[in-house]
Image: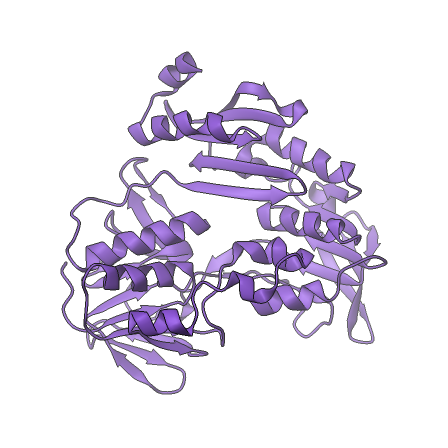
Length: 400
């Protein structure tokens, strides 16, 4: 659909910025409004669990744009403005302050919200990590002599544990699954990552007995984490890293399918003149023949630029990227292309996991679905191309 009328982009992160820049770069000169719930100029999120948390980056370094850049874009940016509804029939977005923004095209880029533990609201020392304010508040509570419990050993939880341990914090990582990250990267790689943390002095506890049943408090601040096996961990600080949910509550009653993010077609369109980008978008990926929702920084930028072209009728090709993500933990950089989750098989084709330097391929059905590498950056490039081309698993193994 070619745009007609004002464009409203809701969500002022990387995906929203890519969309805003993209529509201007592709010749749109009309009214462009950009809405962000945080009282901040747009910033990048991956460094929050890395450079910001360790203190090696100052907050200004994560800014994605400044006032001068916004002026060049001629965009009406409204920070600290929360969207409360979208009426697709009236073509209006409502804000918490009563403002109604008419649109010809709506781009939803509201990302995700972190899950929290019930009953912990207002308890001092308990954190989630999603915003710059979250990261700076958490950073102030870490360091030598402090005891941190990270609940959840996904990529965010393990990155947090690594950053905190680098600062000299005593770190306990608890995860109810038998192996951290096994669902995402496989048992072998997950086991390697758990060993990496243990070698750095992190207490890693996994399995059903490591499920958190209660946080206890003293004088309004957390002091202990109680696990399902009856044991307790003394804590000064707790970070809840148990996943996230798409930020779609404001779209209730809009008629959009928000069962897992905003459900879109292969062109990232959720309805006529309505698109979704970034972490909140669930779109049909023809290359993998499945619905996909990615919480990856690179996807946010790529999808925003794609939708900018789609809005203006500059592309008739579906959105079919090869997903990419990375994770920095201590001195280890993990990089991956494709869809690794829900894999059927993992095969190491270069190096060895126990050596911490390897390339592993991931199979879904009969095709090559993904590749993960540790300290093997150049070796990953050929596999990215094979994933893009839809290589069969048999052909991939023959080329290894």
